[in-house]
Length: 152
Image 1 (cartoon, rainbow, N blue to C red):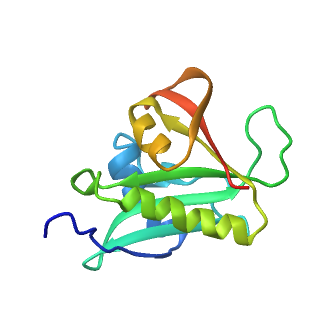
Image 2 (cartoon, helix red, strand yellow):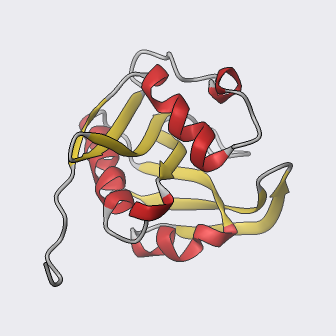
Image 3 (cartoon, rainbow, N blue to C red):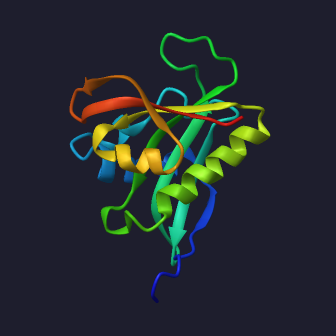
């Protein structure tokens, strides 16, 4: 196969379809019903899944939300981004982010941000985000930064 990029089918999924991977990859100690996010059901939220050979291997959710301490009407937040460990480093996350960015641009958004794990900093920077502010700790999931990508 060499350096050929594996192709993924990236498509919209339901909030319910994200929950198993949210639990498996992000929060294994929490129950599936604890994987529900407050903005999962807002009308223009996008839940997206990456499929490889018919299997869901990655997920991401975006919805309108201003970064902490800002009133940014065109900002969107990325949450619940997860790729199966055996599929990480193969372009799944990048494909998911670009699919989300296209959705946000189509809805007149100009900023995408997230609370991202410090351990994923190299990934976020590789897809156009920058770490902002001070590192902070999230109970259960550890050290994080706010990562931000301007879409203008």
